[in-house]
Image 1 (cartoon, rainbow, N blue to C red):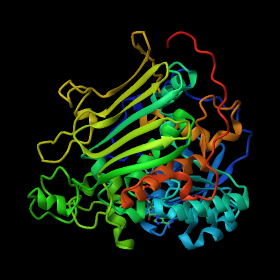
Image 2 (image 1 turned 45 degrees about the horizontal axis):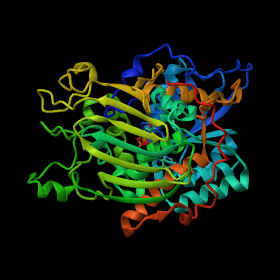
Image 3 (image 1 turned 120 degrees about the vertical axis):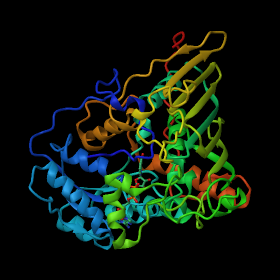
Length: 495
Ligand SMILES: NC(=O)c1ccc[n+]([C@@H]2O[C@H](COP(=O)([O-])OP(=O)(O)OC[C@H]3O[C@@H](n4cnc5c(N)ncnc54)[C@H](O)[C@@H]3O)[C@@H](O)[C@H]2O)c1
C-alpha cells in the first residue's frame, strides 16, 4: 500500500531499513490474543499509513473493526486494500458508518480506539464524541483548528479521563530527535532564542491550495494545519510553553488576484487534463489519487485538484511570527509555500553556544518534457536536481563558545517522513508494551497538541488585529503549563 503523498518530497532516509542506535524504542513481546479494536474515521490519503500498520506490522496487537467516512468510494478503496492484505478474494467487508453514526459504531463494534484522519475542522467533534462514547483516540495533527475546538476537546478529556494520542511524527525523525538531544544535554546552555525557517516548494506547498486546506475555516490556514508540526517541535526541543505571539503575512503568490496581477491568463479550474502546467495536479497520473479522489468525487463533490490560482483561497502563503516563550526565549519563525526547493533551517542560540540544523528535502522542482513537474525523485538523483549546489540531506552542527563547530551524527531512521513515521507507529500501537519511558519524551498527548495549535490560533488572531496575542488570553480551557523542567545533566565537553 502506498502511503506517501506524491507531492511531498521523498525523505532521503526513507530507504533505511536498519535504524541507528537509540532511535527505535524497546517493546515487550505482545501477549497472544490481546488485540485492541480500532476504527478509522476519515479514509482519505493519511488513513493509509494507519490501515497498513494495523493490518501489517502491528496486526498482533491491533485489529481493524470498522470504517467511518461520509464518502463510500474512499471506504471501498481501503476495504479492498484490507481484503488483499488479509489474503481474501474480495473486499474485507468491514462495517461502515457515516459521521453521525460514530457513537453507534463505537458501541456496536466495541471499538477501543478511534483513529481520526479526517479534515482538520472535523477533529474536535470526532475526538470529543469518541471520548464521550467510551473510546480512546489517536488523532492526526492539528488537534483542532480554533478556540472552540480546543475547549471542546479539553472538556471531553476532563469529563472522561480517556486517552488522546497526538501523532506528532516529526518528533520521531532522527534529525529532529537529535536536536532535542543536543538541547537537552545542556551543550549549548540555556536557550535564549530560536530561528526557524521552513520552505515548502511549488509542488508540496502548492498542494495546500488545491482542496480543503485552502479555506481557513477548514484547516485554520497553514499556521495551524502545517506549522503545528513546527511549533510542536520548538515546544518540545525547548521543553517550554509559548506565551505570546505576533504574526504578519498574507496570500501573495497563489490565488486568482495574485495570478491576475502577475498577468497569468485564464486557467482551467482543475488540474486533471491540463496540458503543460507545472502547477496542475493531474489525478490520472497517480492510480491511488485517481481511486481515492477522482473516482469518488461523484459522491460528495470533493475536488482534489483545484487550480492553485483559482478563486476562494482564504489562507496565507507567506507567514512570519515572533513567539515569546515562558522561559524568556524567543522564536522567530517563517513559512513560505512557493519556494523553488523544500526543506528547513533551525538555529538554536544558547548561553554556551548554538546548534544549527539544516535539512534539504527536495533540492529543486524540475519540469519534464511534458511540462509537468517530475515527482519521482529517482529521476532527479541527489545533487543533480539542484545542480549539485543543494544536495538532499541533513546536517546538525553544534558550536560552543570558543570552540570550532562539531557535526552531530544523526542516526538513520526507518520508513517515511524523515525516518519518523514507522517509529511513531510503534509507539501508537505498542505503547502499553514499552519497556521504559522514552528518554526523548517523543510520545505526545492532547496537551502537546493544544500547545502547538495555540501558537497558530494566536497567530491567526494576530493577523486579524495586527496586535500580539497572549496565549493565556485564548482561554483554551486548560492550563498549558509543563511540569517543572528536570535539572540538566552537568555538561561534558563538546558533542
Ligand atoms: N502527520 C502528517 O504528516 C500528515 C500528513 C497528511 C495528513 N495529515 C492529517 O491527516 C488528516 C487527513 O488528511 P488527508 O490528506 O488524508 O485528507 P483527505 O481529504 O484526503 O481525507 C479526509 C477524509 O475524511 C473524510 N471526512 C470528511 N468529513 C468527515 C467527517 N466529519 N468524519 C469522518 N470523515 C470525514 C473525507 O471524506 C476523506 O475521506 C488531516 O488532519 C491532516 O492534517 C497528517
